[in-house]
Figure 1: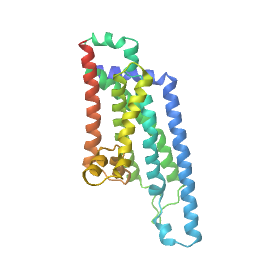
Figure 2: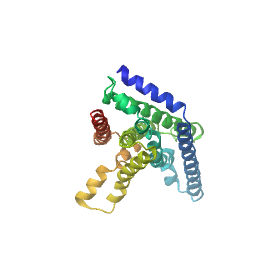
Figure 3: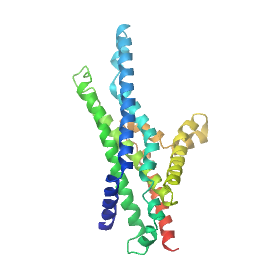
Figure 4: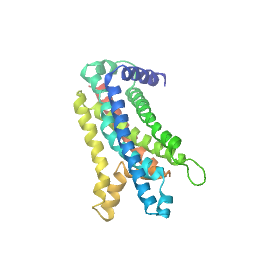
Length: 265
C-alpha cells in the first residue's frame, strides 16, 4: 500500500506542476458554467410563461433539480468524455516514451502497484475537477426560490446521488483512459484511443433508440450513460453499480496485463 501511495503522490505532484491540468480544470469549469447559466435562463423564461398564462399546476411541478441540475449533469458527462482522456494521456505513455517504464520494470515495484498508484492519482484529480462544480447547486440553494413547504429549492439527496453516479462514470472513464495510455508512447494517440472507446460506449445509448428486442437491451446496458439516469433521478441501483465497477475493473486488468507483458520483454 505504501508503494501505491508513493506513486500516487508523485503523479499528483506532477499534475499540480503542469499546465495541462489547470487548462483541463479551467475549461471544464467554464463550459459547465456556460451551460448552467443557459439552463437557469431557460428555467426562468419557462416559469414566466407559466405565470403569465396562469398555469399554476405546471408551475408547481417545476423545480430546479429536474430543470437545471439533471440536465447539467447530463452535459457534464459529455465534457468528461473529452477532458478525462487528456488528464490520463501521459500517465504511462510518457514513461514509455522516456524509457523510464523499462527501468521501473526492473525494480521490486509490481505492475499492479504502478497501475493502482497512477489510477488513484488520476481519480483524485477527477474528484477535484467535479468538486469545483458543487458551486452550481450551492448557488441554486442560496438564490433559488424555496419550495412551498419552506424547504430548499435544491433536492440535496438527488444532488449527492447524482454526483455519486457522475463520480462512478468519471472513474470508469479514467480507467479506460489509463488503459489507452498503457498501449502507446504517444500522448496524442493515447487521447485518440481513449476518446474513441468512450465515444463508442457513449453513442450506444443513442443507437439503442433505433433497435428493438435483444439488441436494444444490449446497447442500453453497454451504454456508459444510460446507467447514470437513475443516479440523476436520485436512485441507486445495484445493476448500475455493478456496471461501472465491472468496466473499471476490466480496464484496469487490461492495463495490468499490458505492463506485466512489458516486464517480460
